[in-house]
Every structure is written in C-alpha cells, then in structure tokens.
Length: 115
Image 1 (cartoon, rainbow, N blue to C red):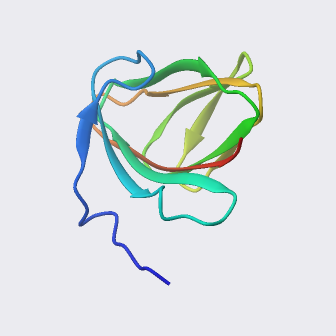
Image 2 (cartoon, rainbow, N blue to C red):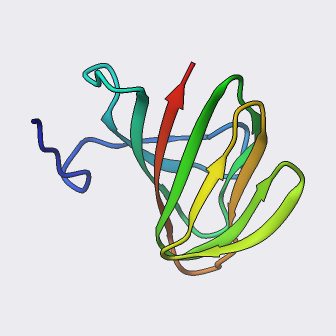
C-alpha cells in the first residue's frame, strides 16, 4: 500500500474552474488508483480565492475541510463550511467553494469517484 504525505508532495498553483485567484493543488493519487476513486487532491485556497461554480457528469466528489472556513455552494444552496465538515457534491450537481477569510487559508481534501 503506497503511503504519501500530501504536505511533502509537489504542488501547483492554478485557477480552478474559473474561480477567483490561484489555489494550490497537490495531486496525491490518481493514475495509480485501482479503486472507484478517480483522484485524491489536497487543495489550499488562499484568502479570498475560490473554486468556481462548475457542474460534473455522473461522478461525485467529497470535499473534506481540513482547516479554515468558507462558503460552499451545492446545487444553488450556499452554506458556511468549517474545519471538520464533509461536503458531498452529487453526480450531475453544480458546486463552488469560496474562502471568505481575509487572512486564513482554507485547506481541503477532494476525492472524486465514478464515471
């Protein structure tokens, strides 16, 4: 069983789904997975950045909030999220995530399964 430390892996800065600013993403697992998971990413949203609103096909994602807080929109409903929250983004759903803090990072783990 491979073990990886997401804090020690190479990261890249990208604009995510036309969101605001650049977020840091670490691809923890993808091509080597043999499970129904498509990928596992560790993502850091600096203050006032976002993952833009986007829609998936017949896959689903879990967002796990590791640190910070923000505003999560799932299928048109916006909710405040914080450390410890786990958000299900269902198949064919739309979602976005925004770091609402002016000083703290929002850190999440993203897992996608299906399709």
